[in-house]
Image (cartoon, rainbow, N blue to C red; front, side, top):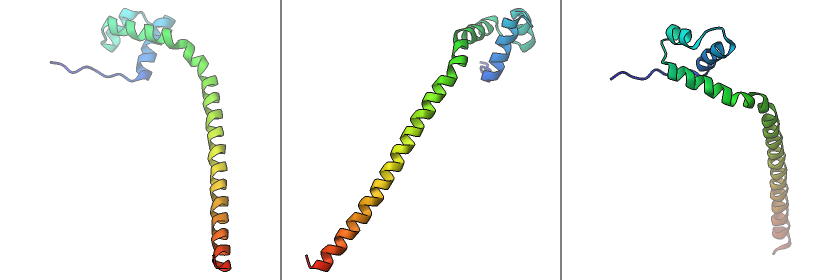
Amino acid sequence: MTQRKKFTPEFKAQVALEIISGVKSASDACRQYELKSSVVSDWKATLIANAAKIFNNSSDKSQEQERIAELERLVGRQAMEIEILKKTSSTLRFHQRGSGI
């Protein structure tokens, strides 16, 4: 039993782009890279189906960056609140000891 070959996403995209752009025919690519035509067809279909995501990615990243910045601000605010509470707590303990309570 032979083990399946694993290909990088970059290689798959390269082969699919060569076929879509007309640099090579599907049969030429299959011969050159020793691939089955069904595999190449799947790669081509996947590339075409997901092509729109390439251009949509920038807005997703900006939304993610916005969310990260918001969470970082929240963490910073909570860290400041914790420090204030620690100082207030130690001040209250000091005054309670000093007054004999």
